[in-house]
Amino acid sequence: QVSLVESGGGPVQPGGSLRLSCVTSGFTMEDYAMGWFRQVGDKERESVACINSDGSTAYKDFVKGRFIISRDNAKNTVYLQMNSLKVEDTAVYYCAKSAYPSVHVTKNEYDYWGQGTQVTVSS
Image 1 (tube, rainbow, N blue to C red):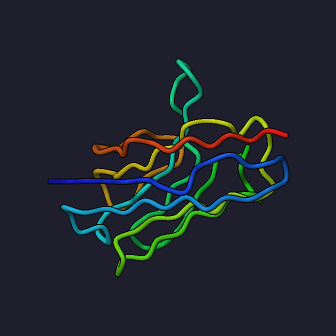
Image 2 (tube, rainbow, N blue to C red; image 1 turned 45 degrees about the horizontal axis):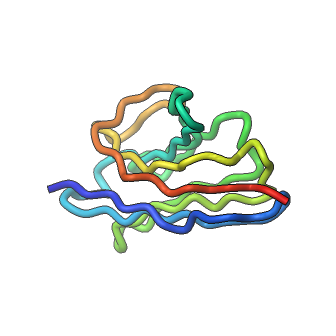
């Protein structure tokens, strides 16, 4: 069965960096777009970044220039490098598998999700 397991979250000071990882199994990751989302409390889960099967990437404006999404298909792993973190980046971050090889960063076209990893940015 499909599995996505995030790791790498934790506490960090403003301006710091974290690297999230999402190890996948149960499907051929190289065939699908992957994405990172985040959620604060009961607010709607929002897209952060996506990476298509061809390696092309897209970001929401609020993380452009600070976050980098990447994938290592040989390791079945997707990463989110988060730099220059801000207090407002505090959230639970989720990895997601798209149902398609490519996806637009504003669309929620994902069929499987990880359990999430907490990122807390605080001084």
